[in-house]
Length: 227
Ligand code: CDP
Image (cartoon, rainbow, N blue to C red):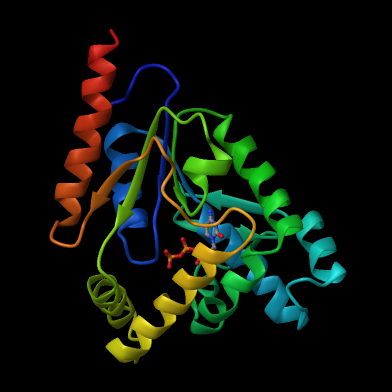
């Protein structure tokens, strides 16, 4: 594992299935960085909404979000919500259906972003989501926007779900991510978009390792160049 010198922030945004999580995890391991899965935090608060049968914009949910404790363990592999491991629950179809509606509420985003910025202040980090390059870490040292065709993204997500023995069709996965993309890109607060200074990578015809190598090369060349 290569450790990069001074404190570095790498931010990656992109739609569902663009490869952000897998790519960011591998880079975190390779470069010895903290990995921040920002979507997992929105998913965790969606679990609160579902359990409490609370509307996304209800004051009750906001109170619970302010009071809750979210913590990552094992460099992002495990997420604890009020000390309970919810790593599997946050990936259920029920959460997939609700999360974008919860994530569009400005008060909820504000709380989560504060938490993410605190984590980012703790050291070198690679963080991925929808607004990491634009809102959470606008001064990140490296910004990437990953994208791919919707069919390719649906195929990747289907393969992931099949590995977890979830029975679902390609058409259903494609419909779910298309709906979520639309909500994430058109919301009023912190919509998903490529930051003006982000490097845009179309991963449709690329393997995960190719994308990892491209990002690592960009980061390490810049690091060497600055010494
Ligand atoms: O893994 P996938 O790309 O399907 O989703 P995720 O990264 O776990 O994010 C789930 C949802 O949380 C997204 O569809 C957004 O609605 C929301 N999200 C967000 O609003 N802002 C972020 N920084 C990350 C996720």
